[in-house]
Image 1 (cartoon, rainbow, N blue to C red):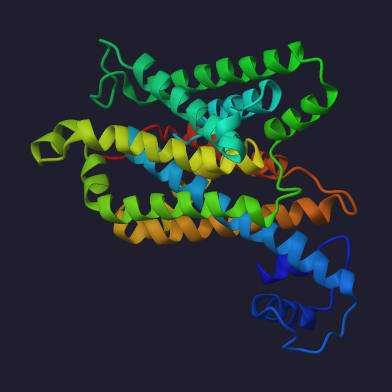
Image 2 (cartoon, rainbow, N blue to C red):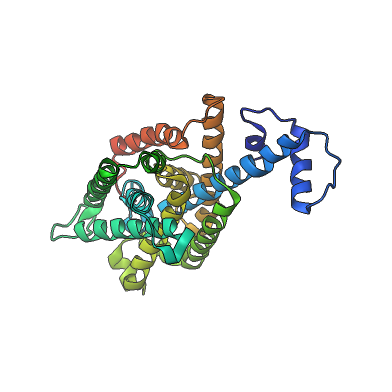
Length: 332
């Protein structure tokens, strides 16, 4: 994170970063300024909130993917593939193009994103149920759930495109395109508290429910015999995953594959036990997004490449490898 704060179109002396941060936190000049005033404004008002947002967005998406993979017993599941991110984007774009509810003000966008994410996730799980039993012995099977999620994702993506097509306001259309690409540009301090709050709630739920998540990986029938109440756990996991994805989408747009890549790699390194898996998943998600944002600024300097491009170039090969390797379910 310190390296990401240093790097950008404007070069900054590494020794200034800590001093500017200390002065900004303290509210007065603990260190005498050795830098020009614009340097402090660039670091404090532009780079620092963006790097912190990248960290919390990455951790939120990774934790959302972890919930999805535990719920579906499928390492291919993540908010992007199961339509949650597309639903959240459709909700956010609807608010941008059609307007939000006046009595909730600035919360219209995150609430619209959450409503879209929840609608998409509910639709996926309803449509994926059926009389055909999958190879893993679960109703619908893991592959059926992933394919349904991809179809629902395409459906909400088409809805988003339709809203953009019929809207005559060019300025609103440009704002909507931001959510479709995925970018961390322009993030301010005011946008951070909701993401931090949602991530804290999701992390708290993960730490409380980690024994149930471990049991869920062994199969729903075994989980029921061991006393796991799926009527409570399943909607709680869906809601938490949707909320985490919606919080990220509401300020950064659709950023794919983070929830797929990070939990899978962390599981290979630290094992499937969630008590040991949750901290590295969150930290790795934060590291991945901060690094992706740093690359987005370096590769297109002095412009800034949308970070969604970086994550897609990274995550798509991993997804293809999982498909070719036949890793559609967790081992029993």
